[in-house]
Length: 354
Image (tube, rainbow, N blue to C red):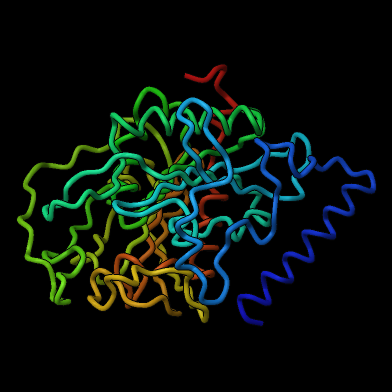
């Protein structure tokens, strides 16, 4: 069955679920949550070959304080009072929300794993050396916005119903997640952080010529190495790191975050995908470090088991991939399985929002 047929099948299943709800079950009405009519497949979803126009769409929910839009995806058969996992899905520099929804398509698994996924777009921009403004996450323009989205989602779904809250970020979005995770607002809320090519706790150094290719397709110039000693985060959370094989020099064979939680020696498994991810950076593809066309592949999964307090520490290396190929369906599902297996409860255990 191809990807399009799979999503049509899911759409039929979603319709059946809605009919059951109308027959008397306690499922929430489709437009009860922030005015979003729930859909499966999710709204503005890429299908076969139509991603280019759809990824520019801004969102389906408006955050009232800023007036900015973001995407909200949640299970269409959600029951009143049911526990969910909340993921704040943050794009990288120069990107946009609906591209990120398809780069890390957690929305494709929202019914099975009871996911609520909020995917916003940054407002800030900066010069990247060419004089052109590139959209990036910036404290002065975006931190309050991300906090407001978080509060809006918590209020809408109910603090006691959010059994785990994860920050997920690609590239500069991953760096932003790491900057935010132990701040006063997020430290008592976030149960886990997923870094998608955005920096590992216990650094996995990027290759010297990391970055988008030059206009003629050649690699960018080598960047100087940083010399500052890494400072580990000061708060507690699970951590998953996912990277393309060609982005880093090598994956370290140990993890200071796993050591912190006294995890056991890491275990290795592999995931094989026969279907491609949804997106790549089609305007700058070809340089393998940055990324080529989306395609099937294999991923190495390195998990540190039996961590203290039920936390999860894991690394995912996608073989023969670079920075921008969207995650394939099986490796996406495995990452979400790891997220779902981790301990949570920070929101359910706290009395009030910051």
